[in-house]
Image 1 (cartoon, rainbow, N blue to C red):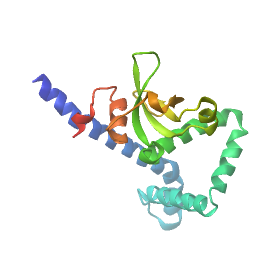
Image 2: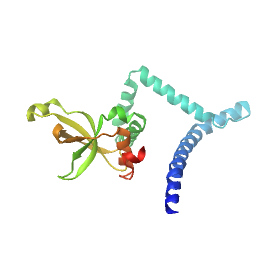
Image 3: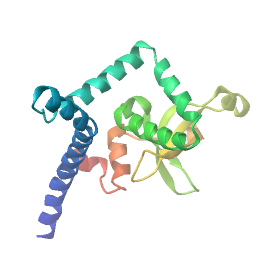
Image 4: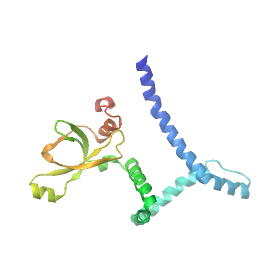
Length: 196
């Protein structure tokens, strides 16, 4: 019975939370623009259109994305420069930007491979992701190949830290980036074989 309860929770909780977040986003968009749009429609046309603000918000987001693309990211850089000059706003804007980038950019493109590295001490291993080859200066000075490895925090891989590791000290894993992220997010509860 306990196992059935657990399986039921596993099936229902992610669905309910996903629906809750999506409804929350739509309600926020509807409340944010809906008041103004519906007031205008009621005044001039005598009716309201529930949900129109969601469509307008979606189109506005697409329009801003198009402007950023046309300006070759100059618009985004200008926005970042503006917020970086505001002490309090920069502390809010940049962490939110990082979260949005992590959620909406394909992590498989950001991370090259899932690996294990002996860290933070001998005999203890951390799951990480190779992000790139290390700077050539490391390799020239120490005469070894080095990689930049991102060690994410668990259960939220939005934060973490980067370490530079010699190639011979990296254990390359035969799991996908998605499987490794699931392992981190679940706090080790979901192993790659559990996902298949």
